[in-house]
Length: 480
Image 1 (tube, rainbow, N blue to C red):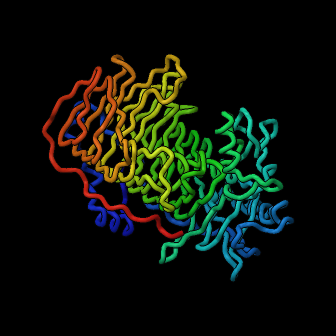
Image 2 (image 1 turned 180 degrees about the vertical axis):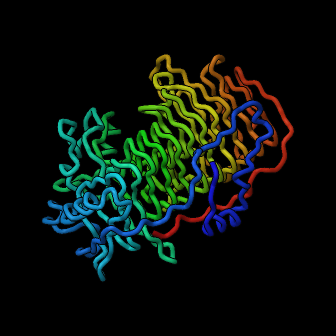
Image 3 (image 1 turned 90 degrees about the vertical axis):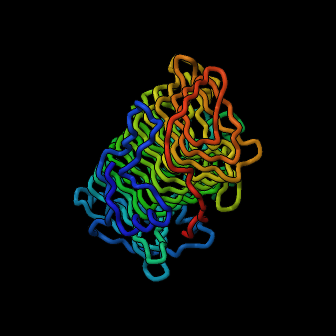
């Protein structure tokens, strides 16, 4: 991956004391292929020119709820959708703008087609409908219920065309526009929130039928830039079978206790970069899965995770994951309210033999972690379900990693599936304040590491390296 640097990039690099992104060499990597990550040359996004501007006619209420008439028939749906449809193919933007004290838009689900961008001006709030029937997929499970199928709701925003996306203007103080899923509020006409439905589903061993906030499916060259996403009913940003994904300056803020509200999921996609984003959610911070096809050439860099389940690969890896570069990220085990994550994990690969596959060339460079229970969690037995799709984690490199203020009972999981499918791991310049672990069937190369595993089927070797573990500080989640 070639990175073009803006002044904002350069400032962050200097402040973080970062390594040069073009000189990532690990002495212990041996014959492992280097994880190139995204193969594109990724530039900082820019705002497109304007096709049309829509001005707000609603004040943003402190309760984040509107009148019954407005909630029952979201007033801005038709005009936003008409503008997006009219501007498709232009490469330009539909801009949502404030008008004096009116800063709100209230909409049912929207579709972004090819060659058009939805842009939110600073301070604008786009609120998602609370009416479950607005999201209903015909013939599927009833949206807003708990049942044995999770498929029944369309996303709030569906990106169905290439060369498109969602962007925002950022003020000099860092303020951005916001897309609010209102998952913490009652589903319209009920006394139950979307999040409570998720909790009920978990307790009953069923599925929540909740809408994702934003989903891009089967498209290329999608950009999400300088916007906020808050309180999604389910996952915030979901990419499926896409090629060419750029996410920059995204802020996601949802409490850790909101079940299945992953920040960013990249499923069965290639050539993706997520960078300079602040992510707080009730499940994975950043995740790579393969539900439909292989995933490859993915870069996560300069991101901050708060109270999530960590930076994850899996659980479905059946189509294979290759060449993921996780560079200079920060993972905190609590959200901005001080709530400890339900799964306080750091760097994570999780799968099991019903949906396993080969995960290879996964390189974690310069990672700062604090307040975690599982700083490294490479687990091929994530579920008790079994099959013959054996998880195989190869050429996994952890280079320059620090964990501070570990939780009581903290341990790393360093496990291969079997002697035939061992974990291939390099540890270099690793400093943890808790070095307990479980380990089996692993081939580990080591230099300057406080974590030195042994166990059934574990073999270790040493090599000569240089450098040291990073010195880490952890900023608070920025104001939205």
